[in-house]
Image 1 (cartoon, rainbow, N blue to C red):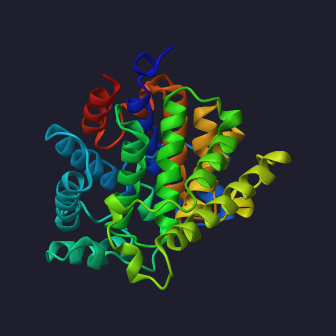
Image 2 (cartoon, rainbow, N blue to C red):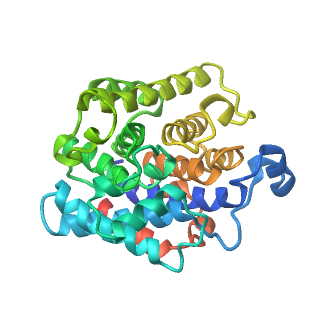
Length: 337
């Protein structure tokens, strides 16, 4: 079945929001506290109402920004940066921005709001998962070249999180979503992502990132970005190691990290997905029952599952209750078409 018939974009966006809502109540708890609150992890229920966090809000902001940019013509850095900046600033001022947003996003968006160039607004030392929790739309938009997809993924991250690992992890997250939506076999996914990371390890996307690298202490642009890719390659190696002796009942954070930073959120979400590639709700529940940044881990897990299996992965009674449902469906339908 092709990706439009599977509705992979809709599946990924709904899955992201469902994971976000499932992980929202468990985000700051350890696993024993989650089990005491929610019961057995394999039976976790979607909260009522199914409220999401800033993860889904910023994913939608990025999605709207991309849609605006592509309505104006060929996707490039200036064409993307302007509407995405506007959407991020609108989110920053929104009364609905009350879901424990990350400090990096708040500080950077305040600077963007002042009209600073994004290279000055970005938080150069931050590789928080806010960089890649929202990048899924870039993996779903049809018709982009590899250069556009990678450049756009890194630029949207760099508007707030300027650390090279934030850029590389966002690129890798978008790549994983793209490959799964194209029908990649989950069992070969880590190998494909490792190859992609090695191929791009010293490639600095000058057209998209401008002089960002000069603001760090690196001798060359290649050295700057390689630091990020090397941390992501280490994270992928931890995923591979965990999959050699899978332990589904153990908190995945113990193998791949708590997910507060970008490469760990990516790796732990990928591990949750690969432990249960054809069990959508089990993968989401495993991601939400973790000691780390549960909503971000679960939202990325949901994006991977939905890109792989399409919208049919999600039970109707869950999908119909998710906050922002109509906007998620509108964007998904646009990209599935």
